[in-house]
Image (spheres, rainbow, N blue to C red):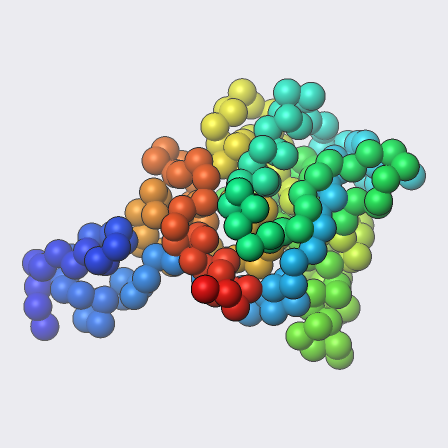
Length: 234
């Protein structure tokens, strides 16, 4: 076993002691993972998003944990559309805010008290997936999986037919604009099917690394490569 040797992933990964990744617990790549249930997300689709306090008829528990200010709301759309890569390959088809009289929203953004979420006590944000995503993988337990996830996370009233981005109330009540922007980009990456980057990767390698100082402000080459892998395109 080689010791005291730095291994650095060739195209910008992370340094680690104790030799290369085959001799340590370090990941072989810092590309974001592909969530196990992501196959149905590989088909380009339209995403129409709304904030829970805007939806008509009233969204369940709308505004219960507070509402975003207009200035905060303005941070989300620019973060979401970064995943279009300037129209590269046309994915997603559309990312647009909901307007009254337009197509119904399929993505709801809301504040949440994640401190008391059973599964996400240390998170700044989390993503909910509709029952149809899980059912495409297994129609027998897909519906129950969506219900159980919402119950275990502490948000049982979140509709099982919708995507959701829940942002920690502590973050969204603060004046931390940079972290709120990072959360928007990171969580929308989950919405379209990407998992987190492996633990141990440096923050600048991917928007799917943990949020913090040095986190990239837009999808990196690794993020684009992971999404292309999900879509099955070169």
